[in-house]
Length: 324
Image (tube, rainbow, N blue to C red; front, top):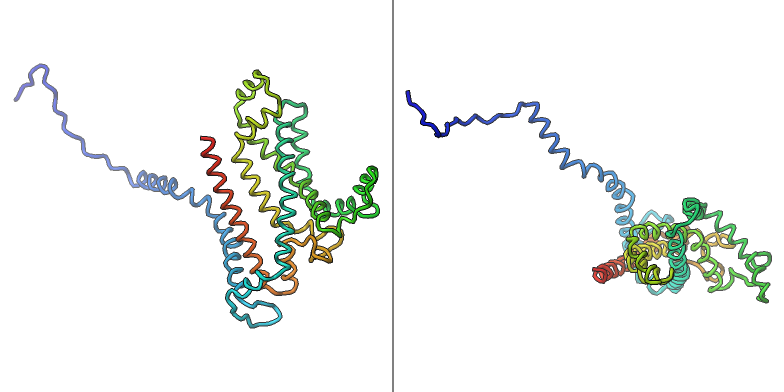
């Protein structure tokens, strides 16, 4: 029998690998499958709904736009790009495009400036902050039909409150529905009233992420509130500003209820089409059952939105590069 000298290490024979039992192996497999597949399962309902109610209608609308498609006939003749060619030479289409851009600019620019100012005020220590923040959302949750009906009365020519207040300054009564500029201003005011508070809360959420040390240092240096807004707040929330600008612009391009119900119910945006938007233009051709032409207009609007989204992407990249 061999003896082991003092200090020699004992040689321990290797143990055979322990194989998990079938139950443990099954649980490991289920866990691994759950970790890899669960994220896809969680987001699958959104993509299924998007394909059913977003992607398929978009593709089908593109197919319809290539046809002379009307419900007055069972034959849908393929016409290729004829609808788009006719659209580009349609003065009513360009009039609706101009009205949409005009209302969009008049409603978006003042709205965002006012929203930033309101968010800046609410970002400071105030009493009843929660009450003020909830109040900002009330116009957004109000029925758009009720808003348009009330504002139509306010902008009435003979008995409207706006003309009554303007008469204090010697201004003659204005027929807000009749003119292009006046109708655009009135509709823009409705849009501003509904969405300013909503955008202010988005800006407020971004402002709350700005480090307080920056404001404290600026206060010590003697910077006023407006200086802090221009030099600290706006540069720090620039990506959020770009996001709100693009979403507000897209929303302004899709405005429908305000011009449709302003003053009188009119799908042409007044007798001279002075405030007909692209959405109203599409709706007009749907009421005429000319689905091919209406689908072509819809796709032109989609192209406009994609262009704006591309500009937003470029501005976002530039702002990130400037902040880094």
